[in-house]
Length: 237
Image (cartoon, rainbow, N blue to C red; front, side):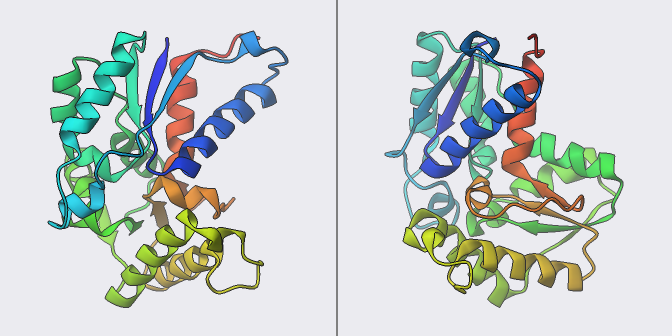
């Protein structure tokens, strides 16, 4: 099944997604190009900001995403996904406009939380994702017993800073730099654990570009999306 990826949000995280998928296949024995899935990646860098739209500070991204999804469909994509948590605010409208099925990343992440069985879940996400209650919708449908724990206001500002720093040169800082995104997100993780979180969702795909935790209680949305894409195509080596 050919997957179309609406990426560019951000560019580095879309590249990282492709890397994660390639790694999974290679670690499962792939040694030829033909062992890997066909994918069509569209770096939708000119679509309006999803977060700024939901914050009421910018134009809608929805029409652009419908147009991009339709382009992917026209060149052979059979199923689509969006490499952006916040964009899932409008997944039903976009899916209806494109008339192709979508992998629902938010649903996949919430189902992962439910499978772990933790009740208190910390959520690290963009301001727009929080304001649009993107995750809350699926928690109420799939895992209503979960209690979502949010960063304090000063820490939420740090979330925004960390996401911005992934998109600029700070992700190339030395590991001792407090501006380095990996250090920012580790600080946020500890903050949410101190607030009682038993698991923490890294609900922005950009985060994985510079922050990777092997802890079982950290659910990385980009890794979840990579797994979901791999699961569409049984690995046959």
